[in-house]
Image (cartoon, rainbow, N blue to C red; front, top):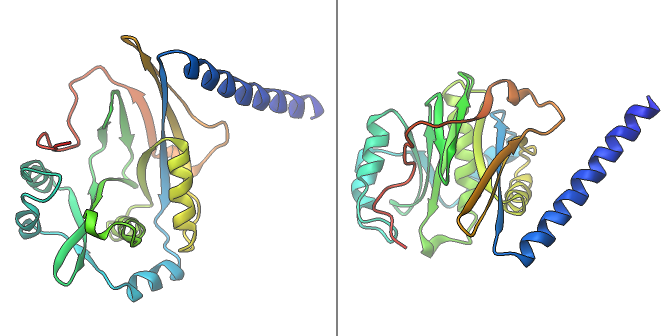
Length: 243
């Protein structure tokens, strides 16, 4: 028993020290270390979150093809053709509107195998009890008004309506994930389970990638798996996106 505790404590110390050494190394060399956290939320939505949606000044609803026509030519996109292809392929658009205008949205993808944006080496394999949430966006004029918090609740409710148990997503950088989790905690939504962490070490023409599951077991890990993939990349963002 004591030996097991000592081994776990030593392993934790090695991980912490290893991360600190990596940060010191990358700070001195022309390399960057990026991490992407794959997470899952249970679709049981607490009453506090539902009340927040009901009291919101914004209306949440399922998106339609007409919404894509209205979004055509908005700030970040020259065309919504990729979105139309997603909708034709069975993906679900969820929107938030203000006075009849769509000001924020997110997508739910029911595919069983998905290539992650920025990570062509990996694919996300999703079981029948989970759905993938992605491509969240808010009009610049409406940022800072907690719309992402609302559309995240919409994601979870959308997964619940579809009979799914988990909504899966991934977040670039652990610090950004902590910020998102803190914002959602204010709605009563429990912390997400971290299913996997993908690391990218790149610079000077070198790119190394690896992934590591947390040692602790999460139920969602039975339905979601990250694996390496050498096949053709399927883009997750419109090719018409501009800087």
